Image (cartoon, rainbow, N blue to C red):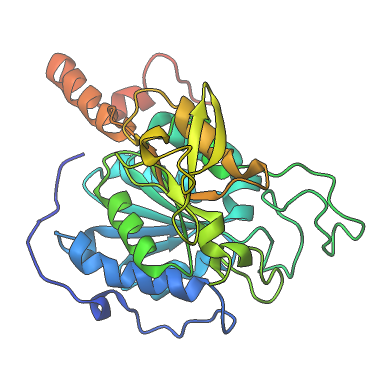
Length: 345
């Protein structure tokens, strides 16, 4: 557990995080935008040697990400990115550990690892590329595909109810939960910075268009003619206002949100729900996570909730330090050949 990392300050550029590997995603894929925003954001975000950064991935289109970042990386097996990242962070807590994963990789076979990484508050940063489809394996429905989705594996429509990644992370006590969209680069850059600055488990769900197998899944949120009426940008301390003319708002009636018109004089911004991303309770964040379950409500993007508590990796480090101070350093040979072991002749 000794800290062998030398930290120096250096000013990087986006090119410093661009590897020599050819980027092999389909032309027009939203993954290109995510990669570009990470590479543009990291020079301002990373204050230590880039050799201290590790990208972990599982299996999927998104999981090629470590190849395209000029940092250390590890391409794992399907669904195991969170637990591999956990091992890296616990073994060397001074590394900055990032995870690139997709909705199939993280929320299907990787679901168990995901919720426990949230619960334990491992200090890792997870970028979830959510395109609501299995893209790498050519278009099967995924855990986030909408009910009724017609795919190669659901030719008559999926009867599954989809996972809500934001709700799932909040329910598992993640200490930072946010969302952005691939076609809103400025917003995504801001969210990546916020993720990187957080101490503890951080999830950024990114709505990412798969133009080959699920094109237009988020079109209503990205099209110039519709996005302003269907996207709610969450800003701490500000009222929840949206609409092409900024004339609509979200008001809380007890625990029930309602859409109100603030242009006719009946309601004003003073009547609207004020976003508090630092709330002690996850209740309001959970309401926001399910806000667009009904068609008349917009889809929130931004930071849903963040709070602080000790990270698992820091807890492990402190525990080892306390035990060593109390009992001294352990003897591995003594453990291996102690009274609870025997030899078979």
